[in-house]
Image (cartoon, rainbow, N blue to C red; front, side, top):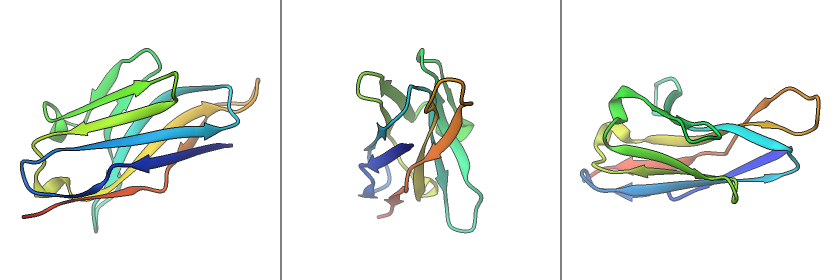
Length: 121
């Protein structure tokens, strides 16, 4: 199985920055795509940013130019640098990874427990 542990959430003022981290551990052969999703109260979970195993990235329109996703494959860790935060970014942020745990087993999705990001003055 794959365990994902997020860190770095917290309370920040509008215009501020936070950096989220998500480390993958456990028994797996490979991790392909990693991503950050978020879910605000009363809203559906949405993709924020994704990155594949060769560094190709994609972003939600609402965060383009403000957020940057990156990963360290040696550490099986994905990061989300969030700048120019606004109140609409308030949500629980979830790390996601697609991983293969054994040869011949299809890729499966794994999720972290989530970390709260609150943007408020």
